Image 1 (cartoon, rainbow, N blue to C red):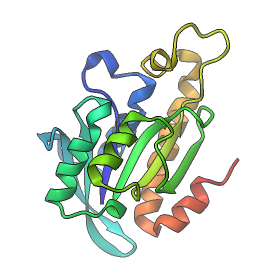
Image 2: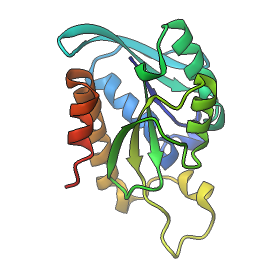
Image 3: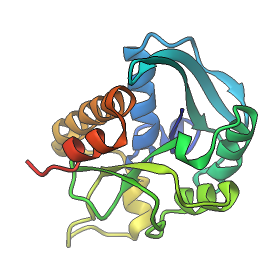
Image 4: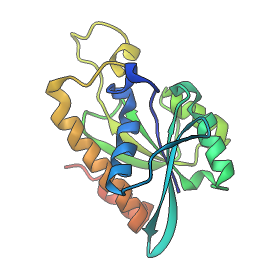
Length: 193
């Protein structure tokens, strides 16, 4: 399984909403005591052996270091090397169409205008990979700027508790996906509070 956290490289983007995927992959690496990330496949990669539905499986953690709209190049390189099908790939990404803190897990679908997903779909040649969508919400009516300004803005202090809680729930959802499979993970993750 390849778990891909989408984001943009460099300190300018480090704490932005658009890097929510990076943040989840970093938490997984810490929770699983994964080896340090190393540069590979136009990204930062670590791998760890985990138990998947009773069997040991290698999990690859990948943070593409191309910019968001070229993320698929990194994913394609890793998928080819590890002989992974699209169904073996889980892409973790920010989602404007979900309220802040809400998670949704699904297989396949469109990109909903997300340039990282467009790139992954194009490079894998299929939309049939798993997506863990991390709700960041949409800007409020008083926000000055466009959507790009919003996603590339740092998470404000007022949103930090909900954002941090979402990252924690996302790591739990990925643990569930690995331990019990996609159906169990979708049932629990997509259930509304």
